[in-house]
Image (cartoon, rainbow, N blue to C red; front, side):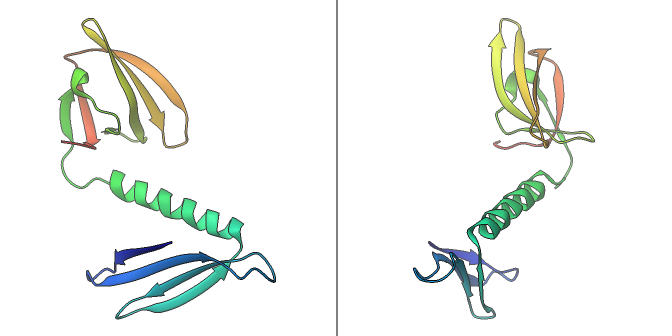
Amino acid sequence: MSIEIEDTEGRGVALEVVPGPAEGPVRVAILLKGPAAHASWSCSPAAARALAAALVGAAEEAENARSGEPVTVKAGELLRGDVRDGDRLMTVESVRPQGENVHVTWTSGGGRSWSQVYEAGADIRLRRRLRP
């Protein structure tokens, strides 16, 4: 698998991830090629999965970081992926209208889920809006 990414200065870098050779221990090769960087690394499949999970976690943290002032929306306008403003990470999993109310299912950063019912016109303060 090969993808183009950008370094911190906006220069293109090729990232290639390939299975290792058929003989010897089971390995995964990771290659970075660009104008300012050339690096290669080999690891076990388990280490490659751990690296991928760490990258996903870091990406989610970066996306959920406060990038400006929180916004307030009506509960009836919540969208899947919206992140609630507060001390703990809470992401909207689903929103279902129920008459004048909405049933919102939240997911925590730790993977727990719970549901709450709000009046459709209730103000909900969001740290980040997934979609405008």
